[in-house]
Amino acid sequence: MTRTLVLGGARSGKSAYAERLAIESGKEVVYIATATAGDAEMAARIAHHKGSRPGEWTTVEEPLALGNQLLRWSSPERLILVDCLTLWLSNLLFSSGQEYPDVGEITLPALFHEQHDMLASALTKCSSDIVLVSNEVGLGIMPFGAISRCFLDEQGRLNQSVAAICDRAVFVAAGLPLVLKG
Image (cartoon, rainbow, N blue to C red):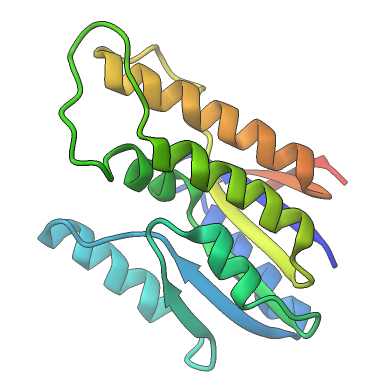
């Protein structure tokens, strides 16, 4: 059983790299998609990702309860590919429907903390190989707006906590993998 975190920027090739790892494993693949189609552009992105996956893979759409799905599909004969933690984090941040202020202290929804803890626990208990895809968002300038800065901070913390649990961490840039851990 191995846990691999694949990091990269937008259009870096991280999803394609993660999918190659899944194919090369020779195992049954369960693909957990965290994206939701909030508009036509996002629906097109989701359709593109669906079209690039092998037809025999099982796809599970789960925007919030990621840890529960890891445990549900856990099996030594499977590889679970999660794409992606960044969209999952966005889903959690905005799950309560609350409006965030442009300035000041951001209070994260209780669901955020609950699901983050559940993910960490599931990663240690799951008997499947796991490949998790996430964006590295901390390489640019500090964004304008409190919620954007909160997201940047929480994504960085999430990536760090998941990387600490994972056996391997790989950074992908321009389609080229750079092994950071393992």
